[in-house]
Image (cartoon, rainbow, N blue to C red; front, side, top):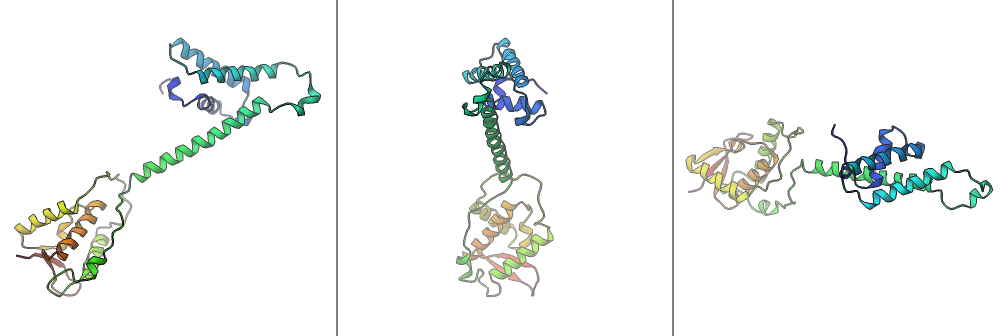
Length: 238
């Protein structure tokens, strides 16, 4: 593992958390004197490498030295300890705990964001416009028949199983897919519905299905079925 530099940390508290984790101790159990030594050694190494050190790191170094010196000096006012202001060592540990909670939350949100990028999303769209009228013009099939065929297709391909590959966030155009289907129907006037799905990624499947609905609604194609529960065919309207 490469040597850590000052730029690898988000501030002095981040550096302190790293040193505490390295010591394999809990924040409230850590020895301030030991952490102070490691902190000052790290800052010294950065100086020797001629790296710029933000003033906040130097302020923390001074704070650690003050805390360490207080622990070394005898307490002459033991009777008045309860009346003293907040113990600087306890206050530092409290700040470290608060920072650790913040950092852990940030990492969790970052992890959720990365997972979110693994999913393809599409804005909700009503299919009501397709259900108001038959989506074919031969009087034999409706949208429910096409939806049933679509569901059977997905089940055969085990489409609902989790996919491990990460889907790129790419906009897929229904208009472009319609053009492709038109080209297919120029070569074949009639084609089996399932033959349109040569790719089973979620964006491709959704856009292809919506394209078929749009073309049927616009009377560009007819949807025919030889018999109940048989294959559905798209046929070009000349």
